[in-house]
Image (tube, rainbow, N blue to C red):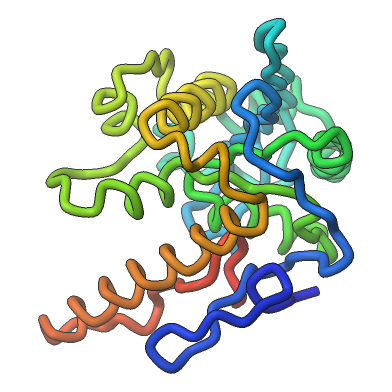
Length: 252
């Protein structure tokens, strides 16, 4: 299901910004609570979310009592390209020997995300349009049933003029949080949660605006940044047609 921006259309540059795959019947939490988060990260077989299959899925529950991680290893059912192995370190042979069936990992991942939303947890996803699009494409019916907080998108909106890259490692350095083993799913999920926590300290309004306002801020801000990037590419004579403008799930 696709709805307008949390039930409301938001016109920007003549277009309608939407929260993609948002379930229109969902009641979002009143506010983002940094003490009640589920941080999520995938390592996959491909950089293109419309082609990727899951290799590892990490979900870290974060409350005042601490962090509880869960990481699932999947046999993706296809060869893991050498380029993907170079990123996350998992080979085809290892995944085949030790991984769970791919569909089981997919189903368990979605089940736990939905359970987290049922507990009013914010789902923390760094660059949400990648990971959540993977889930949407693989399942065919994954919908956004709760609050999504994307530290990458929030950083672009709240600190737009800072120079330099905005990879997870770059943001960890900027916000002075621990990364651990980059491109290891649990480490990445923990790092994203730490950044979200820091952002809420720097910009307290992130934890006081309503869930609907926070979702809309991210969807609209992401759209504006991506349109600006598309226009930049086209101004350089380059193809900008593949630049995604939909958040938190790519529309196509």
